[in-house]
Image (cartoon, rainbow, N blue to C red; front, top):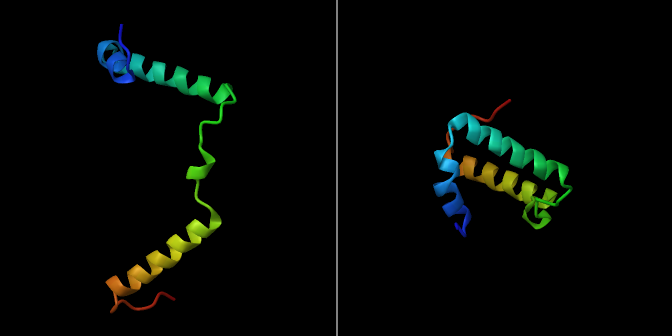
Length: 73
């Protein structure tokens, strides 16, 4: 009996046709949506501060990477 997800995939799922694998994936995803289970770990989501920090960093990086570029109007 397979004991890991990888073993289950190798022994059973990978043998299915692509259309059957897609149907299985659809069943699994639909079940997750309907189960009201918190799948997303909120600690992994980006806060507004994270997004602001990224925007500032990427703007600073672009200014140093392309110093001769003209400013956009």
